[in-house]
Amino acid sequence: YLKKGSHVLAISSMGGIQGSMKFPGLAAYSSSKGAIITLFELLAEEYKEEGIAFNTLALGAVQTEMLAEAFPDYKAPTTAKEMAEYIFDFALTGNQFYNGKVLQVSSSIP
Image 1 (tube, rainbow, N blue to C red):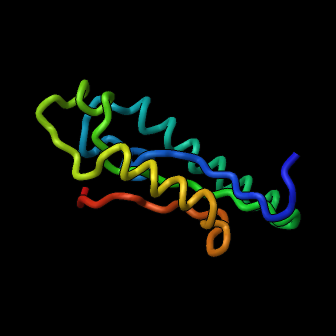
Image 2 (cartoon, one colour):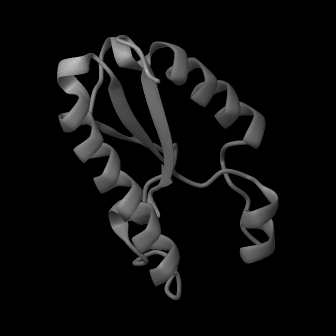
C-alpha cells in the first residue's frame, strides 16, 4: 500500500492535451492519453487526505524507436536518455510542489 508522502507518476503525452491536431489519425492514441490525465487528476483528489500525490507528465516529442517508426523523417529535440533522467528526478521530487497536476514536458511548440 502507498504511504503518506508517496508520489505516483503517470506518463502521458501532449497528444492527450492537444489531441490529434498535429498528427491526424491518432485519435485512439490521443484519447487513451487523455484518459490517463483525467484518471490521475481524480486520484489526486481522492487521496489528498492520505498525503499521496498523483501527477502526470505529458511528454512531447522524444527520439524513440516508436517515433522513428511512425515519423521516419522527423528528428525529436529530446533524446530518450534526457527524458528518462528528467522523469527519474521528477518522480523523486515532484510531489514537493505538485499534486493532481499535468505538466507539459516539451521543448518544442505544438
